[in-house]
Image (cartoon, rainbow, N blue to C red; front, side):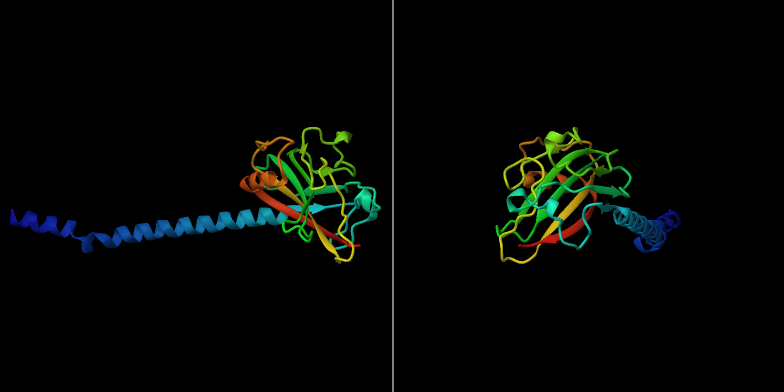
Length: 207
């Protein structure tokens, strides 16, 4: 009986059995960390491949007169936009156009469109006018001018150049749970909650 008890003690002792088990768990943990790192790199790579381009706008350049708000001497015509390299799992897109330099304390929303189908990868010039029906499945909410669709640049005179950030978002849902009465802030909240990747094209304009 004493011999059995001694063997039992050696097997159940914390120091005698902990080495192999700790080694196993450490190896498993290392594999999980490596897998997570690889997933992170893959996601970063996919996001880096997502790009927004335009036949109308040149990144970093001045916004053309046609895209300026009509009350400021422009044509209020939304620009042509194209995007590519969306990550796997993209089920829809959202577009948000924002001026962070507007003197409001909260910027200015110029164009917000969502529920753009996953098989749509471009917007023709003028798609920002809902009556044109160029993307009938998409929803366009009111911009900060109070009208639905696109509202061009019209910064106050003497404030220098404002930035206009055109951003396309790849989303993991086919539809956001919103309608045309949603505010840009509500759309932004839902977009960020379902975002897989985003791409930006920025231009500037001043008066």
